[in-house]
Length: 109
Image (tube, rainbow, N blue to C red; front, side):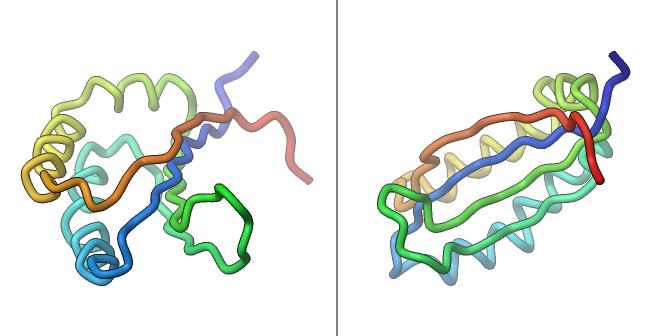
């Protein structure tokens, strides 16, 4: 099977009192750090609008050309730099990554 579009989804919860600072950091520092790898097509951020129990408040979608690009990304120095920056800036852990899952596109209409 040909390597198709691939997404990495990450669900996050963020404390209300830091959400503005967290979003600012994510949009202006974290996402650009990850994009420097050249392996991510784009990153999209969504906020939950309905009250679904146990659903994370934020959803990040990282799009890749294929599963091979994602595998390279998992080993790239830009990701490691971004992880270290996250640990340093948010050592009080006022946000949590609830889940992370990957999907490969099978078909589109």
